[in-house]
Picture (cartoon, rainbow, N blue to C red):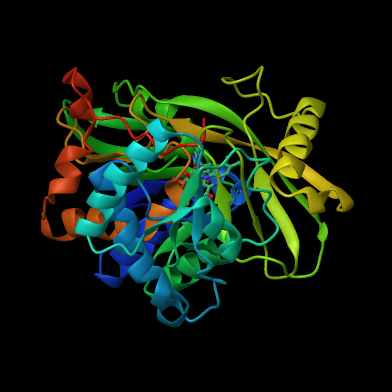
Length: 382
Ligand SMILES: Cc1cc2nc3c(=O)[nH]c(=O)nc-3n(C[C@H](O)[C@H](O)[C@H](O)COP(=O)(O)OP(=O)(O)OC[C@H]3O[C@@H](n4cnc5c(N)ncnc54)[C@H](O)[C@@H]3O)c2cc1C
């Protein structure tokens, strides 16, 4: 193990690996420390959907710019990350939601995002298997450049490219402590040795709270347990991700034909329990077949749990601490950290490499929670 580095990143998920790639490409000496294997956290359990249809400007901007990067990422990294743009169809159930959707659409379009409102009759033009009456839809919004990618392949492609530029990645290595001298970082203690550094990035996902507490910083993040399933393969029937914020359901068909999707479990929200529940199977299959009755002929093969790292306003926490020099947060993604990772890592790299503070970094800093008027992201599945 190297004993010194300019930057140490805690966490080998998609965010840690993409940041390592960007930093190493800028000739910055960087080490990633991952306690298990790459993508073993939320990244390896996620739906890997990529959408630009957000209610807050920062999320929409990050997602829009990330899509531009995703479009060329396989070529840039030299590996196929299976990025596909089948669009996201967001179901609208009532007039109040439609008003909010129209407001969001105006903001999204002002950024250059191509998004449309569909009436109830146009929904089946995009996803023919949906039962518009069964899902109580009055319409939908649709963005054809939304899509998804393979979360494992994306993380490994970033990690492999980072290594080619000189980054070191230590898996099965746990960060135990971070030593300070007053408000300056001195070193990072792992179970395999000590690394001297003045800059640490906390990309530890749902464990970020623990890592921040090593330097005396209290994060407001909470773990939210989620379940997600995959069905057997069926013939290709639709390309879009279907999502409803009211029912909490999301599902899409993979290239090989399986349906992947999830829904919140009605009776459970917080905590670190990993055991999947029968309640999820019931709730998911009832809602899914209400949305697309033809799917009652398809078997669910497997389901698993994962954790959202949720902040009070459902937006990420990014940037350097005002208390500890060189301690940088990259967490709190609240269920949408895969899709934002290409741009988040670019912004953080620009900050670490060149001291560039973008408006997004300021808006998404931990300091925002001191202000009582924080803006909540509305477009989340609960
Ligand atoms: C069911 C589900 C569905 C989702 N669907 C989507 C989706 O469709 N689209 C989307 O954009 N996002 C989705 N997400 C959210 C997304 O998965 C996360 O926001 C994203 O993967 C976070 O990546 P990360 O690299 O920040 O964190 P993680 O992938 O969680 O990585 C953090 C890593 O830090 C490591 N670590 C923690 N503590 C230490 C330590 N002390 N020492 C060393 N290593 C440590 C962990 O082992 C872990 O590998 C979903 C999440 C879930 C659970």
